[in-house]
Amino acid sequence: MKKTIVYIVVILVIFALACAVLFNFNKKDDDGKDLETVRLAEVAHSIFYAPMYVAIEEGYFEEVGIDIELSLANGADKVSAAVLSGDADIGFAGSEATIYVYNGGEKDYLKTFARLTQKDGSFIVAREDIKDFTLDDLVGKTIIGGRAGLRLVNL
Image 1 (cartoon, one colour):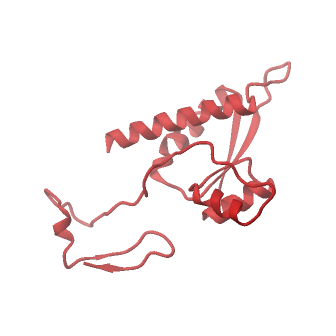
Image 2 (tube, helix red, strand yellow; image 1 turned 120 degrees about the vertical axis):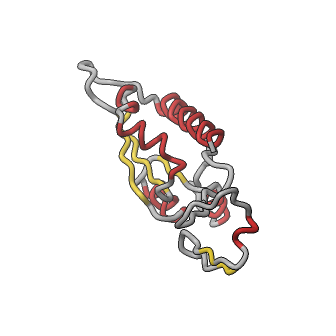
């Protein structure tokens, strides 16, 4: 788990630096007070984005001249629509959204330029602590999926 969090922090730092370089966010007025606003649409609120949430709240983006306007788009299709319509500058969504838009024949298709996660960010949680948990402990249990389209799984 620690290793995953470290990877996510590193990826978010690289992402922020890439954005600063690609979009030249360090431009300021003569008085140095203007911030470049970046409208970011995210596919879902996720614990995996915690380093970004902390960076926003602690003012780390503002220190380098970036004002993040974060919005929840609730789905890769809505993130794609927000970016394509100009309602968002960048979006966090799976790369499949880029493929769907491209295959749909859009002339101004999306471009994937970074990978934030490698696997699904789902967790199995329980009401009580289970010492020395193994997957065999799930036999006879019901798992409820955490997002639309997932269903009960009886094991």
